[in-house]
Length: 512
Image (cartoon, rainbow, N blue to C red):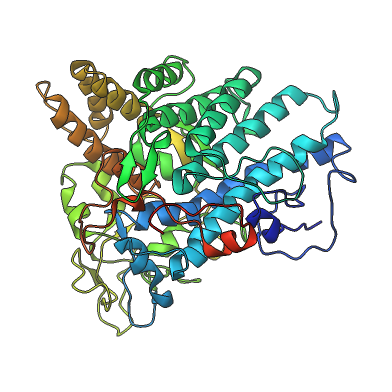
């Protein structure tokens, strides 16, 4: 059975007709049959199929949300290479932060992020609305999973757009937006309500399902960003709200003290095609090397000739300034491809399109007309030999234990406990430096704040965290490579014109 994602309804921030027993994630499908809460979700199999559909929306986080969180920052740029990646200028518009409510990136990927995340909300609402009392075994757990997943999608919507409608029922109608602080309160309350019914762990057959640790990780990040998320954005920028540093520490401690998670001895194992075995992963988007179900990160970056079928896309590149910020002794610098290149499949040297040996350079001299060999490429999520075309089986970490250490360290530092925070950062550094290269125990609060921002760059590079980090640290709209100082209201994306036209009750963000 295939089902519709009901794009127009998602634009209304309401309820699409979704279910997908097989966890279908093609948001552009045309239905061969239509289901609704009135004629579906009547058996345990159908309910669990609907739950799988809500989980399948997690893969959208590695799509448009990731694009917006990466390319708008000092981590990533997508240069134009001839006619490749021109795309009406949208990628350079995103990196330069020059978007408007009706510009190329907004009408495409910003609008896509809105649709994809609200589709996750809608799928959860459909199943929740259809459940009858005591309908299936473990119903309390399933309801908790649905509420926690819906809260996570709202966490991401709040991050990108600020004020969005809160929808918890199946009615298809236009909705007024809630304030960002109200969305924050909703996300927090839903996560706290769901947590007690969730297990600490699942068996291997249920790997990837929501746990108490996943809820705590979302809460820890929510509280870390509370000043931003409960603040107010005007044309003059962000007026910060109430800090929740101690709550961030407490949520992190519940994970660190649970005994469920541990840092992977091999840092690279967190990103491999078999990374489901990593003890560090807390919450993931599951991928499979099958059509439409895989991770495409490596294709976005590597050269056309890095592997044969279908070949790389030769697009996403790391900025030279970011690449050069990594210590040469840091294991994490090995995620980058630079210098003479070899096939990812055979290890044999490869050529560029003109037949010359391919040598990647850190420098991009002109992002509007870059050479095919310019720019360092990221292969943090390495090539999957079992791939299907561009679809790789590496699971995408939404949260992992290393970030929890860094969240606790940052929150402790902001509370004035700098001496207690430094060892937490050094736990992360000890794994990737041999011999060890710890941070100095004598760092000031301000120096450690800067060091944590850098450490998150090194540890979480390419994991879609950078935009949020730069906003929290107050440097998102500041100049960086290929980008000038931008207006402070750009800490929020605009509500796309397509959404405003579909739902006139929505209110455009300041400055747009």
